[in-house]
Amino acid sequence: MGPAQAPLGAPVGRGWLLRLVIAFSFTQGAVSMARPAVSYRALSVGADERAIGVITAVYALLPLFAAVPLGRRTDHGRCAPLLVAGVVLISAGCALSGTSGSLPELAAWSGVMGLGHLCFVIGAQSIVARRSAPDEQDRNFGHFTIGASLGQLTGPVAAGLLVSGQGGEMARTSGLALLVSAAAAAVSFVSLWRLEARTARGASAARRSAKVPVHRILRTRGVPAGIFISLAVLSATDILTAYLPVIGEERGITPTVIGLLLSLRAAATIACRLVMTPMIRWLGRTVLLTVTCLLGGLLCAGIALPVPVWGLALMLAALGFCLGVGQPLSMTTVVRAAPDGARSTALALRLTGNRLGQVAAPASAGLVAGVAGTAAPFLMLGGLLVGAAGLGLRASGGKPADPSPGKPADPSPGTPADPPAAGTPADPPAAGTPVGPAPTGTPAVPVPGTAAEPGRRPAPARDTS
Image (cartoon, rainbow, N blue to C red):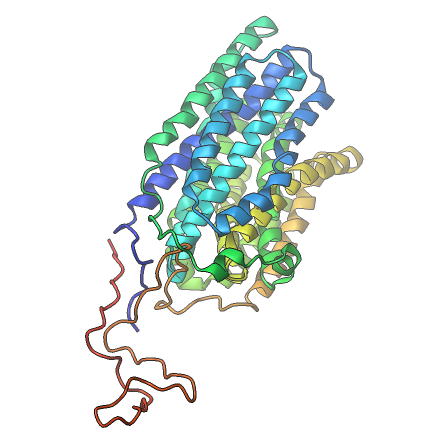
């Protein structure tokens, strides 16, 4: 069987993926830098813990209402405009947060920032899904999420370097950090060119008009599993970032060491995504997803044990490596399981689950910690990841876990289908359908297994560089 074919009309090579990763690094870095800076700015104008919680919730909750409509639009149109809109909204939200002086304004601009991040991620994930052949999806989604990891690694560090002081000084430095984050997001415009192929204007009427109901998408085997796995992995990352400083305070670990431990976790996640392709070849995607979720659950529970700092560092490095698998493979799980013509909507539903997890998981962790102590949230996360491991096993029961390498990727709307390669047998016509007249006037009957007619243009070979 020959190599997988790239979508017709797609630019050669994977330069588009590198540009997309660069753009995602800057936008994610800007958001990761702006979110703590918004909290510091709110504190400088008199916010208490509840006000900080409301501002944080607005970032996660406001985009929930736009996720499915944006996914629908992307299913039946181009993706690149969403990237541009996302960068504009992120830059505007960051800059206006840096100049606002009231809590309602900060909450509103935080919501704008969250909406921009949602637009960018839906558009970017849809581009990766469309432009990747089935046997390339795991690798390309893994490389794509490296951009998020780089942004999450550098953004908080940059915010910590810029924000300092108390009262009026904190207001000034946090505003500066927000303006710098707006500029960082705007830098991603440099990479937003030729990320998707220009498609023909006339997409098929069937694809334009078909709208798969949301309940049907959610009931498709594999989609709920992908959503839950993504939610569990993201919740583990968020709660780890929020509660590891509390664990450090109880055990006498300095904030500097805690910061290094969190950076170690992020670096291990990046390393995992760089070697994901050979791991999938060795273990298979279903086994890899299940094993890493299971090990991640055990490691999360292990953080609750009173281990020395070096033991905690080893556990966090291993945990970061395990958590690096869940996000990209959950994207592939959702894309493969979703009905045709609803893949962007399914990815939007996955992001909706992520946002709900970002709201519900910290709230649940806070309740658990208040009742059973600060180590209890890590036990809760362990159970969540073990449940995700079980769903990872069930997710493979839908579409094949390892597609045949010769199956082409889903083309963008309006892109002509690839013609069969030379020598590929032609499909026989339906019963009773005449084929062009034979020289004698008798209708020709196709013989099964005969080669396609000569003169047909061979399909373009996939560039492997």
